Length: 119
Image 1 (cartoon, rainbow, N blue to C red):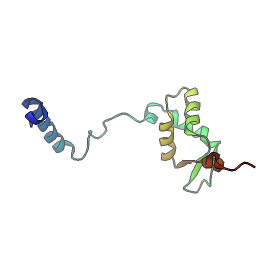
Image 2 (cartoon, rainbow, N blue to C red):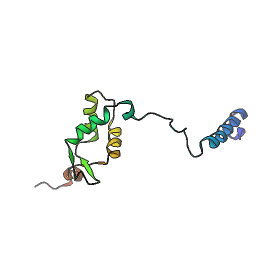
Image 3 (tube, one colour):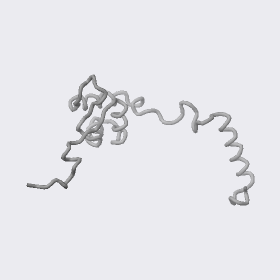
Image 4 (cartoon, one colour):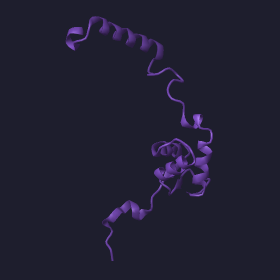
C-alpha cells in the first residue's frame, strides 16, 4: 500500500490505526457526540427572538396550520438582523426558518419571471 500511494509505511500504518480506532470508538459517527460548532442560537441568545419579531409582522397562513410562510427573503432578513448587531447570513436564516416551520414564498409573478406577455 505504501508503494502504491507513495506514502511512507509509518504513515499508512498510522492511518490504519486511526481508522480502526475510530470505528471502535464512534461507530458510524465522524465526530464525538457534542463535538462541532455550537449553534448560532446558543451563542447569540437574542437571535431567535429578533428573527421572530421580524417575521411575525410578515407571516401569513393559519397559525394552527402546518404551513406558515413569509414573503421577506432570507437575504433581507439576514440584512436586518445584521443591522441589529447579529452575525448571520441568508443560509442560516433559511435554516432557522425551516426549523420553525416556515416556507419562503415569492409572489407568483416573481416565480414566473419575464416570460409573461405584456399587453
